[in-house]
Image 1 (spheres, rainbow, N blue to C red):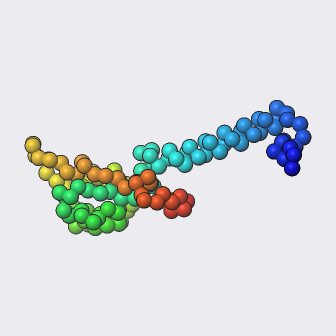
Image 2: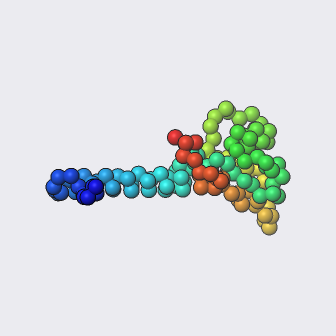
Image 3: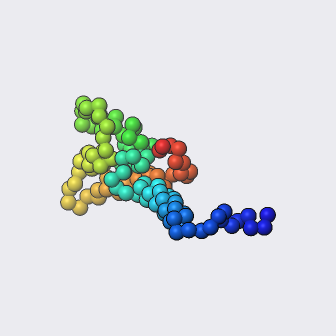
Amino acid sequence: IRGSLRVPGEVTMVKSLKVAIGVLLIVLSSSAVAIAPIINTFEDFFVNGIKYPDQLRMFIGIQEKQKILPVLEAYYGRMRNTTMSWEKILKMVDNMFSHDVGSVNHAEAVTKLDFYGNDGVCLFKYF
């Protein structure tokens, strides 16, 4: 048991470099997993839904893309059956409401239910 935590054999520059590269790869990969959900480019992949303010009554209880799209289709008419980005959905919802001078634009005050906004962040959902 004595010396069980010691490196077997002699410590060389090559072995030290392998350990340093291994530690660097672990740190970089864990940083990428932690930072990727907050980058706007990956918004469509990591955003689970959008919560609109209570003043927009037609969106109460509607947070997911699959539930928002029928509301947009009812307003705009027939839409192509295509995958829409969150940016496009937000723009379409914003265009549904008046932008008169002095009126409050409630469509701008949305909360994104993203990767870190969930009660339990589970990586298995994404991979």
